[in-house]
Structures are given as C-alpha cells and as structure tokens.
Picture 1 (cartoon, protein in one colour):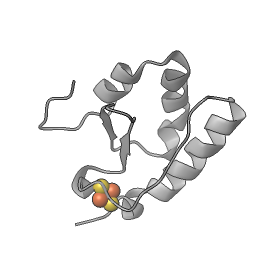
Picture 2: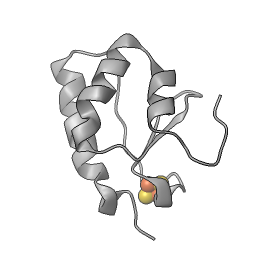
Picture 3: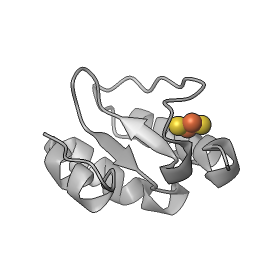
Amino acid sequence: MDSCGARGSKELAAALKKGIKANNLPITLETNHCMSKCHLGPTLRVVPNGPYIMGCQESDVPELLENLKKGDIKALAARFPLLGTEQE
Ligand code: FES
C-alpha cells in the first residue's frame, strides 16, 4: 500500500504551506506521520473536529486556498471526500 508520501503529500504540504503564508491565512499546517487512511491519501484533516480532505494534489492547492479563504470546509470535504464513510 502506498503511503501519502508516495502519493505527493510532501509536495502538497510544501505548496499549501507556501500558499497559506502568501495569503496570510490564520491557519497552521501541521504534518504527522500517518492518519491510517494511506490508500486514499494524501490525507488532510481540518482540526479540531473537521472533516478529512482526501486525495488532493499539489495542483489542487489554488482550489484548497480559495475554499480556505472563504472558510468553506464543507465544499472541500465534498470535493475531496473520504469515500465510503459519512462525514459530518
Ligand atoms: S501515510 Fe497518510 S494516512 Fe497513512
């Protein structure tokens, strides 16, 4: 099974971190080793209690940033769903 790292998470995290800083968004990006959803990754999660945002890539960062600027986390979860599960 591929890890998120093999699926582009490092490039995604770097681009997202750069975009968050460039847009001066009040968001902290933290990385961790694994959230046990490797087969659907890269795995992002908005905390606290936010949904998983699954499978986006570096090329999706502009869309991620637009939704983060609007605070539209539900749109992100709908666009990059955790398949096979219900998210609140
Ligand atoms: S490595 Fe990302 S969820 Fe496991």
